Image (cartoon, rainbow, N blue to C red):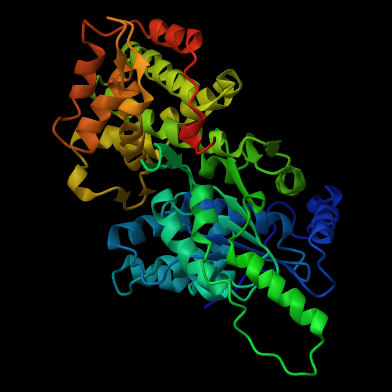
Length: 495
């Protein structure tokens, strides 16, 4: 079902004048023109996945463009049936009553009573139900604008012009394989913007990384290129040939030129609260430049870049080391010295890994460090590391945590370790000048793998790794990377 939208909602001015003076309608018209949208045919945008970032992204678009209802339709899909537990319902009730604007909005929409009943334990709320009122289950403390929610995936995506991937990387392939079944009869190619920061490792035919945009591209391929429809003799032959061509074209999947990645050093809740932030949209020039302009807001600056896969991989890499940073912070009672020691070693490992993945890694240093910094400060992966070290969470609880969503750094640890353990990628070790797998020069990654994946060590092992007297100076690891030709394009699936 599709949830209703509060048509009176405006992020700043109820009459929408703030937005009009910033040229939002002109930007919308310009983008509609690029997609050849006719009058009466709205630009259809759907966010697939309702985690914190996916929900905020949809809410930002709704706040900006939702007032132009005849020109754009913004919706969000999430699975139905996820119940809100009693403790979360009680906390949500407190959040509602602490915000006068939210309280008045719910009363005006006749939606307040159900939250009272849930607080008293007389009713069970569901995640898709509260999302319609602007509450993301993974981000209860930051109310959003009301959203149009769809729980039927086919209904959400079948005619969408722009699909935003707000899913964890671990779910991206399966969901987009299902979506591909609904797009077999499409005659237009959608644009896909992926927000996902995670990777998988594949070892055949050569060791390489698979990113969410690649998962999407491959998931939408099908070997069935049959046209599969009948036509009467009255139908124009040219139209038939065009439809046939487009369906065969789409059978090969959404072209990579139509799949982009958006990421940056930011926290979803802070972006929605209009803290100044920036991001990069990466991909083919045809769409990245118009989208950067379309998505840009006064407090959310969007740049564009052609390097799709590398930026995507870097977004997954920082999650790996954020978990370790959280462990160190908890185990040392927030010792600034211990955290700085960890930061020196983890950044040197990241720099080493980027030299394996990128031909010009120095161009990634700023964005990677900025994204790492914000994740260490307030990201869910650092929080997860802290909770593990404190004993408040255990690995037996899985990677999807109530109130936080999927901890993508865990699967990324496994993927990077598996990939960098391959002997075919050998590099020379500084001690003994003998060939070793790249992971042997990444002691923190090895330790995190033993804590999170094989579980043969506890969180305290991360401190032992830092205090190992045989540990090389992190500067040496950087020097090795900078003075040797380590770049291996095959890791990103390039020739």
